[in-house]
Image 1: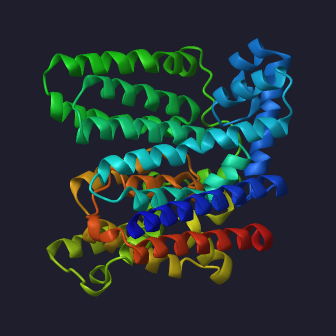
Image 2: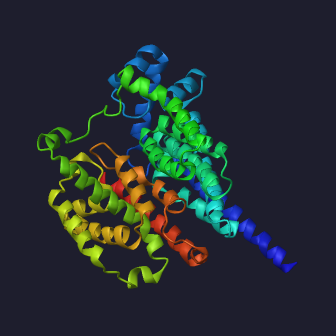
Image 3: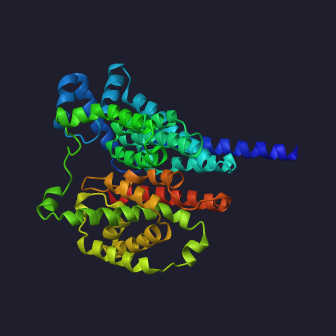
Length: 422
């Protein structure tokens, strides 16, 4: 009886904590919170495009690149329909905010598959960490195609995990493909993950007819986007100017393009790995040096030589921006990048992780590299398809406290950035 009462009290505590985090998001909505610093302006840019659709849908649809908007037209068209239905902008925001909460639900459902032997209460607390993601909060309050794309991407991940780790049924393959396609129509960056899923299905099905069905379905799902971008030639993906891009491109080096991405994206990945690294003291104490370490140093130094990311381009990730804003040089960033290299490509490296990182790099084809593109995407990936040896021992009060403390500090840093740096 006492045990039952204890369990009820733990459930009540979780419900209270969930409501508290939800209430903070609603409070953020009321005060116009924007922890990214640019989400509000981006949203009103999308609203402007939506109004263009309301005034002349045909012209706006077939000349979308003239509107100078890099976001997918899908979310603008949806907002346009809601405006025509007579809804106020604040009501539209509130609708999208509650749709975004499904991201937490599907993250939890995915965790239930990956960690089926773990008490569900731990997994629920882990899934709630999304509430503390500055990007989630900013884009839930100020709707953006990226957050809706991430929602559908997480749904596609759920069905992929359902296929891979439970029942190997073709319906889960189709569901994975469908939701990834929807994700990509909102945020084209996610379409690159189809490479990862295809390789997994290819290994499983090999020459079976199910693989052919999968390929045909994906061709069918991709055709509208292919027709719009390449046949109608409405190539909006590079619309909108990037500050400093013209000066940068005048001295453009193709190898620098990749060096910038490798170092910055690696530093961002390391940022989200920090609470996981801290969960095991052997991750810090046991330094592993082998023959590959020298190769790692050589690759790192090669990237340093060609690195030339300009702060004027905006973005660059938290470590790059911190180093340049407070020290006006890249030295601290280079040190952090080297530590990132060690943990990512030495400590936690395997072919699966390397392939995912390769896809993350490919998914950011533009010059600019924004930290927000990887928040909370990387946390979701770490606990679903990355292989970083998270077992039953990870799920305890200490490690979850580290994760919550990490994100709390991240929010404080975001508040400081928005109020004192921008």
